[in-house]
Each structure stands twice: as C-alpha cells, then as structure tokens.
Length: 426
Ligand SMILES: Cc1cc2nc3c(=O)[nH]c(=O)nc-3n(C[C@H](O)[C@H](O)[C@H](O)COP(=O)(O)OP(=O)(O)OC[C@H]3O[C@@H](n4cnc5c(N)ncnc54)[C@H](O)[C@@H]3O)c2cc1C
Image 1 (cartoon, rainbow, N blue to C red):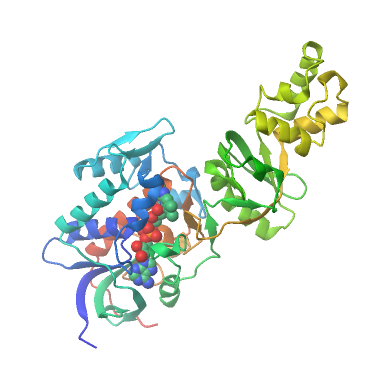
Image 2 (cartoon, rainbow, N blue to C red; image 1 turned 90 degrees about the vertical axis):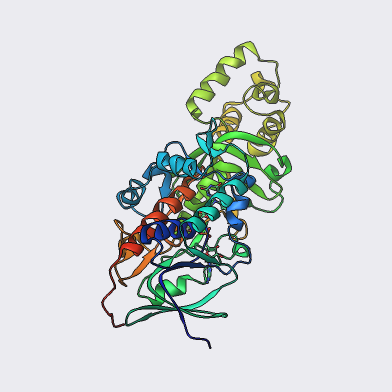
C-alpha cells in the first residue's frame, strides 16, 4: 500500500454538510493548510440534485428548533443560532445563487434548478482550496497518536482533524447507506436506533383509500395511542396513492407514527379531512343542514366539504352508510359515523416505505456526545460530526438542509481552528 497522504482536515462524506464543512475549513485554514473531502459516490451531490423535486428547497424563511425532532430543542437551537436562514440566503447570494421564497415559506433558487446550488457549492469548495475526491469510499477510520487514519481502496489517508459528514441511511443508492455509523461507534460514540423519516406510509392491501389514488387535499393527521390520546398532530397537503399515504402531511408525521408504533403496536393514525374543524362543529352544521337540505343525499352535502370521490367513499366505506341516504333519514348514529369519518378517520398503517423512499433518517449520534459550540466530539478529541449522521431530523420545507449548512459550517471552521490534538489512547 502507498504511504498515507497527510491532511490537516479530512472530511468523510461530501453531501450538503460535508461540502459546507469543506468550504469553511478551506476558508479558515487558508492556503497553507490542506483540506480534503472523500466521498464514495462516483458523482458528488446526487442527493442535492434530486432534492426538492430537482429544485432544491435550500432552506425555509422561518426556522425554529420546533421544526426538528430527535434531540432536545435547546440542543438543536445552539447549532441553528450560529447560522440562520438569513445567513443561508446571504451565503448563497455571495456564491451567485439568489433564492426566492414561495408562499409555503420554502426557499428555492430563482433558477428552479438544484444544479445551480450544487455547482455553486462545488465552485466554492474549489475557491476555498479544498480538494474533493469522489469514488473514495472509506472502509475504516481509526485514531492514531497524532490524529486519524482513514482507509479507502485507493490507499490510506492521515489527518489531524476528522469530520464525519456521512449522512444517514435514506436513499442508500446515493452513497448514504449507514455503514459509516460504524466509524462513529469505533471512535467512542453511540448511535440511537435509526428509522426512516419523511417517508410515505403503506395501508393494508386494497384499503378503500388506495382506490382514490392521485387525490390531494389538505388534511390534519394525528398519531394517537391505543386509548385515543393524541401524541402528535400534523396538518398539510395529503396525497392518496395506490399503496397508502404520501405528500407533506403524511411524510412529516411518519417519524412520529413509527416511533410511537415501535413502543405500542396499538398506535393509531387518524385523518381529519377538515383541518382545524372539530367533530362537534361539523355535527352541529350537519344538523342545521338537515333542515334546509333534508331531501339531499348525504354525499352531495359532503361534496361542499371534501372532493366528490372522497365524499362518496367516506360515507360508504368510512361510515358504512348508503351514500344516497337523504339527510333527513340519517339516524343519529349514522350522522355521527359520517362526522367521525370526516374528522377522525382511523387508517390502518401497516408499515412505512423504508429507506429507499425516505428523505431522511431519524436517530443517529446523540447531540449530548458533541460540543455544540464547535461540533467536536466529546468522546474523541479532533473528531467532528455534522449533518444527518447526528440525531436530528427536520420537517419537509428546507429544514434538513438548514441543519446541514449550519452544522457543517461549524464543523469546518472549528476543525480547521483546532490545535494539534494531544495523543489519546483508546
Ligand atoms: C429525495 C430527497 C429529497 C430531499 N429534498 C430536500 C429538500 O428539498 N430540502 C431539504 O432541506 N432536505 C431535503 N432532503 C434531505 C437532505 O437531502 C438531507 O437531509 C441532507 O442531504 C443531509 O446532508 P448530509 O450531508 O448530512 O448527508 P448526505 O447528503 O446523505 O451526504 C452524505 C455523503 O456521505 C457519503 N458517504 C457515506 N458513507 C461514506 C463512506 N463510507 N465513505 C465515503 N463517503 C461516504 C455519501 O456518498 C454522501 O455523499 C431530501 C432528501 C431526499 C432523499
């Protein structure tokens, strides 16, 4: 094997967090020091290119710790406050990428092309004097007396500071397959249980909602325990598909359903097709309408509330009521069954669609094991962690990239600033 190449800062993983770390490590060290990022993928930035439907939802106009899960909000806040959404806008502006805000609050490049974002990041890495080496999959990372040794098929690399920016397990074909958690564990860290997040949910085979595939509507989804206590709510756009539930509302709630279901198999998912409206309100409205619309069929009345196909199925399948029943002939239990189907329909989720379809990974290295002012490991001096490898996952809307930008920047600056680490023995 050829002698190890020696660098001041070596980053494993050149996704969003690793590219940000490369830029800021390079800018901080200046030309006298060497920064390299190794990535197993043939082409750097595959996940950035497909993000946001190929448009890259770079960030969100308002980012708060409440938009994330996994770790405590005060821990997440420490990192987010070092690099705000406005800082992201300014950073990309300096790189020549202007961002536009859509009415959802999501920020995209004005070109509507993720390639603009990736190209700008790659040019910035180059200008910062950092080297990117694709097709360098790391198979081992270990501590030495004066730093770290990193093994690839192409040879060994030696570095004073090591940054783990290897992501999670979502979309493994992009290179993030979870293998690199073993590096963190080998260097003294723990990794919490990981599950897919921002992932579509599969209903029992042939469930009647799957017959409405392609229908999109606003809805509120709720995770409830076996006793009906609501544990988490999420409103947004819901897409019914041939397998079950997708769209932002389903994706956002998925990690909460998965976590609760792991604890208690009696966990339920409930859909309110009239977000913000309660059972009592809708029941009172239907009672009122019975006076003026007594001869109208229940389905035709519900069409004022939800799409026609859904109104029909909610009545027939969700409430087991003949959809042609005139309002005046609905019994009280039938009316209440219809209102229940509209406002808290239980849906039988059997599983999530797995990492192949998940946008992020829930779980990872606990933030308590990292100094959040620097992103340096509390377990292994000279090691830094950033991005999705950490136990933080955000909602849909640009939050996951914001976490990657903020944590990657901190890791880059502080790894480059670090003094030579005294020898450690493990
Ligand atoms: C389809 C899709 C769309 C998304 N859209 C958005 C969006 O619009 N907005 C948003 O905020 N978030 C979005 N996300 C989430 C976002 O892409 C991730 O949260 C973010 O990319 C995480 O960045 P990261 O750098 O930590 O990890 P990753 O982007 O996963 O990068 C990790 C890198 O490490 C490399 N690597 C892993 N193991 C090794 C190893 N052993 N050796 C060498 N290299 C290794 C991988 O090849 C990869 O390049 C989307 C995700 C998906 C899957």
